[in-house]
Length: 411
Ligand SMILES: *[C@@H]1O[C@H](CO)[C@@H](O)[C@H](O)[C@H]1NC(C)=O
Ligand SMILES: *[C@@H]1O[C@H](CO)[C@@H](O)[C@H](O)[C@H]1NC(C)=O
Ligand SMILES: *[C@@H]1O[C@H](CO)[C@@H](O)[C@H](O)[C@H]1NC(C)=O
Image 1: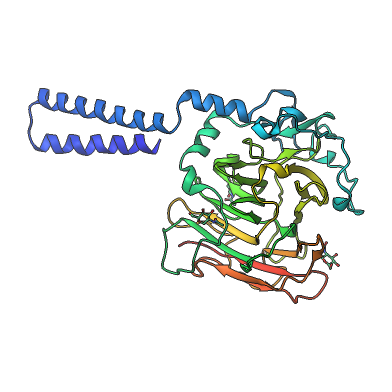
Image 2 (image 1 turned 90 degrees about the horizontal axis):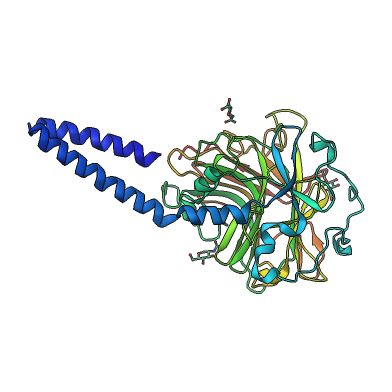
């Protein structure tokens, strides 16, 4: 669309130019026609190069599996109920003969006493969710997939470790971070991480995104989980849950590619509207609990949301068996200037009532012990003119290990 717009303005200026040159009408018309034909071929060729219609259709087949039923959330979003074994992640060559049953009991190391039997039927208009044996997955429209494919390399979520502080660097990477992260320690490994995340609603323009998430780096691969305001992904400006997976060359949101998560829950989905968000200065905080935890017995990675395991990534898809780094915090992608808000339009004030916070963060260490006091971590913002972060490991109960982050962006 943007290309067309610029094409029109091109033709307009060209017409003006030619008129000024007082060319004969015929010559001018021929010239213009040639120009338009040339330009259209050029534009078409470029789009074709990135993704042919065939490729898009193929990709849609991977992403959208046949639905046995369509259900709606209480907010009115439609979800497909997809047969457990028809999920995109089972298209992965390594997943042939993969043995897992959705009714299989979760590994004991992951079972929690609290809230383990919680049902999320109330999220759905039918009061139940999907039928047993199926999982709720959001259908992706063709134009949404096209939007996601465009600019994909620079747009893809990432960790902050490759970025350095540069206050004047406004458009180097278009990604900005305000995070707390583990310090790089050779040989240190992690088997999981958790956090409780406040729900906020940053202002974000189309093509930009603003996320609050946990990032678990597993060798060259990684998993992110949290919330994002991302119009390219969800076609609105609501705060919605997401995961992002990168394994080798394959990467995507939620279950949108073979590297993606395998959902196991019939009543909780990704992409759910987590709102209404926190109100600045209010005494109640809206928050959500996230965990990315490795199963001790078989090495699979699990996503825990609100106290329930809702999906996993089989161990065999990853090159490495454990994580080397973990970070918690905000990531924005600006696409163009000015950059979007992170959390809201204020810098953090280290006050629970005013801030976006991430708290009760824990890591699971090499012995599968949950660690509350994570001392070897550092706060990092690549550009403090737009985004800041404060790390408080000694904050008093009822919360522990708080990270105050965010900012107006505008850089
Ligand atoms: C850092 O950059 C290198 C080279 O571009 C890339 O291979 C690696 O995955 C990046 N690491 C992170 C944590 O993003
Ligand atoms: C989201 O979009 C709606 C409608 O376009 C608008 O009224 C609202 O202010 C937007 N909210 C944010 C936080 O950008
Ligand atoms: C946060 O952690 C503290 C200490 O472990 C605990 O007492 C508190 O209940 C936790 N808060 C939430 C909301 O889970």
